[in-house]
Image 1 (cartoon, helix red, strand yellow):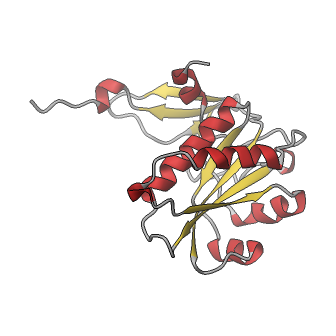
Image 2 (cartoon, rainbow, N blue to C red; image 1 turned 90 degrees about the horizontal axis):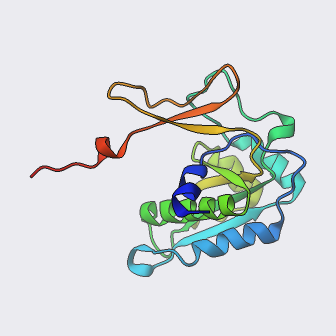
Image 3 (cartoon, rainbow, N blue to C red; image 1 turned 45 degrees about the vertical axis):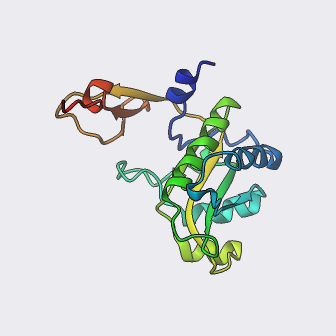
Length: 192
């Protein structure tokens, strides 16, 4: 797959094939990719937890919020839920700044998931206290995000935006998930 195709196929998937397992080794391979990406000052403050055991995957699900723009959708149905999660933590003993590192690591892991036939979704709207208790996360770690993983069970398409189009993603009458994106001509500026 060409890199451009990999990037455009790497979307936020929120519905998954419930019968398709995600092995812990697969999650480990994705986390390993995050070990090789750039890190501010090379401090490497990110840590990860693989959540693959079915009972724990199920217990984590209610701690997550899904698709804020889809007000009438509370998240994937029982048979469409993620089969694994990666919980991303920032080690406060190493740094208090995680923004660049977390974005680079998350996108790299999602690209890896896409390349291996999986999909995922970065979730930042979390019940952090419940997750901390569920996973017994010590206070020295900041809970940054959760990445849901599974085999996609939905089609996500990119729509080219025009000047005054909304940025809000939506599902059409056929269940296709549309994501408006700005064009390169809209974002590549020249002030000279």
